[in-house]
Image (cartoon, rainbow, N blue to C red):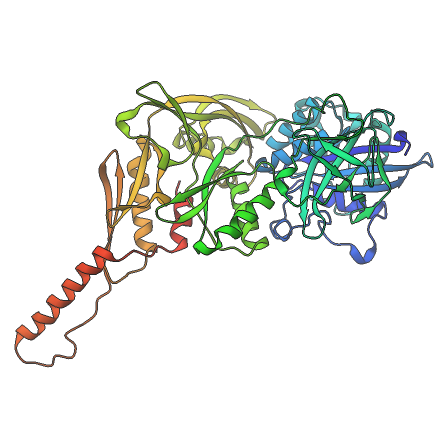
Length: 598
């Protein structure tokens, strides 16, 4: 195929600025979907994406577009997520493109993730086409948003396109801008094959479906290929493109985006960012790929029934293939049995992953309290990275603990500054700067311990700003902190699923809140349940769940009191024996409640 008619571009924006709706209108405008197949969020395949109204996975689709110059172009569009937890999907998409549509909501204006995604695209030298979306809204401030784009993002006013994805306005202008401004792909079809793996999925019939962008050479059905990371060779079974359905083609040539299958049944054999090359005439070096994202949050995931452990192992293997920012390793817990210690980019990422495992693989799961990675220096000078409170060395062996810090960018209404600063103070934030973007909006920069922002910080920002605040963050460094381990004991037995790392100043408050919450959620049982919180070997909080009572003397209708005492003593002995050998059943709601406690 002639490279000059190919354009590869992605759609990037802050969450809820209309990326998926714009992708729907582009598909309809180019007649890529029939009227029968038209629906909202066409490129969002997962039920979760439709229910929540957010994009979780990047999606690729090939379009045919007849431009004003009467030439027919091939457009490869990649729709990307907007939430900060899924920024890895944006990175992967950008690596496969030459241009990007930067979508900005006409009523919300430039938000934190808008800026972050723009810088990401600029790092890869992508052509940026700014689009002001939702101009049909009554609250739209088109001129104000155009001013923000030119001043804050340093883009030209004349390059801005006005659109309403909901009403289909401006779609033709956007496609013309893609054809005119985005450069055709580089590379040479005569060079040795180099194709970037930017995503993959598992199909029960075809095995691993590998999404590729060809930078040099061509991939044909039946050819022998080699993965350059581990030098394994495979034969290509199918070559195809997404239209958005899978359609087989004879080959993918230089500059094209599509998929291949090689009858690979083991998900771990495919690595996102790897380079595919010809096994007979391999390229001398792989493509740059992209940097592996480091997880920010860790938690344990366990099956409710221990017999489901093998099914959970198969499920996480397949999910890792489809989500390369998700990492895991086996672990066992005295309270919950065998499971996995899993790493995520944020709490929404964790929540979505758990829900996908439960829905797509029919599993019933329990998750432990989320934790970040602490750097622990022992008294003997040895340094350990601790992502699980149960691995924390004893206090006498610890010299110091360093916790990860992040730089947080907040864009908020000016009248919400007081509330945001109060929230930041309660989360141990270190104030850095304030910049007024307009009389109504300000950008505030803080430095926070990562552990303070992973659980409910974003929700509280939204509450404090009546939904108008936005946030983005980046990892900074490790700093020494007074961090300690908080243990929860149920009837004097440590329950490691509730263990957490907390700052000493907040330990007493969290211990009390957790004990009170567990008292509410653990149902009464035949024995008394004592819930205690322990820090540095000392009990700092306690609650008691009283036992169920049976009136053993109900059948006694008089007579000597000794008969009743005999029954009461027998009941007391039975309860002592139950307390010695009995186990306390803890409902899953209790584990989930532990996650929500800030």
